[in-house]
Length: 388
Image 1: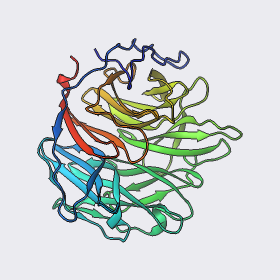
Image 2: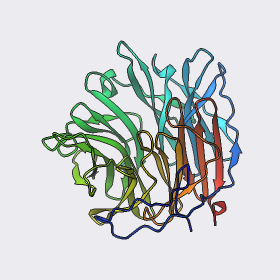
Image 3: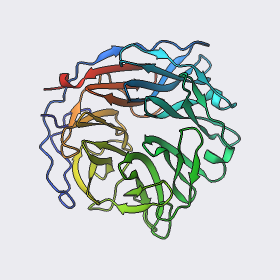
Image 4: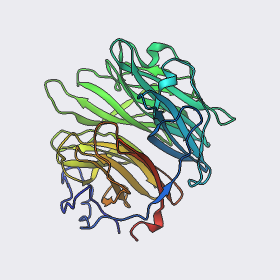
């Protein structure tokens, strides 16, 4: 049915024999061409500005898009939108509580039971470092910045605050501190506790670690990232599991040449799948029991630094957003990561600068938001209309 490609036709699937439990299917020559429908996100009240759409998420019949607005002078403020059907949208009331919160652009989101939470940041201070905070939705629908001590996310130990995940056990943020991978956990999406320096999660004699993404699992959490072993310049992919966000177990993901990063993770059709850049393109790993296996691969090494910017389950399929220096691409797998096929985007989006592409899904509908550096747009498509 569906199998792969990024911006130009590539007839080669990146297959690594070692560590694969089966060989991915041969990619199709032509990309899938979804019948994208343009959506209108209304302007939030207040000073007009250019929308900066950065992330999307859906759960329990609700859809959300988060980002910000930039005025004519380049000053930013946070913004968010919600929808009950993925078609008709309304701007959400937004309530910052700090000097930098009033300038945040919301860049990551998660939801549980129809309730939204988000991460926001604005560079500032003497060194221009990100001033990061969390946001959570009140029962009345308002998105509020949660007050937090400065050094919870910033300060001399700060490195990155990457992604936000939600699940039955609560909420979890994946990122890094000076001693390696770290997480922040919360029972309610408002008050977060940092877990840094945790054995197996943080860096040690095996190298410096970093966490990029997280997903809830029946047994707790899976976090994915990478490690930089001593004396090397190439990262190797890692995953960690935890029942409570405190104690962690580390697993090295198979990479025949020892190189790669697991940058995004999702749960689809009962399987946990991670995707990230490898030496010759993008690789996928799937959890089988307690063992991670390298399954599919797709794309090719681009002209710049490659990254996976999104990975979401769409029914029983997976949709990935990638960037390779030449532009953003959209990929779909119908077999939990074994094979991939490129999906044509509604418009070209370059990689770099003030650009972004994000996806969310619910039921048989896929939502895509993009920012090409000049204009932000939102689109949707019903998955049965995609290349059957």
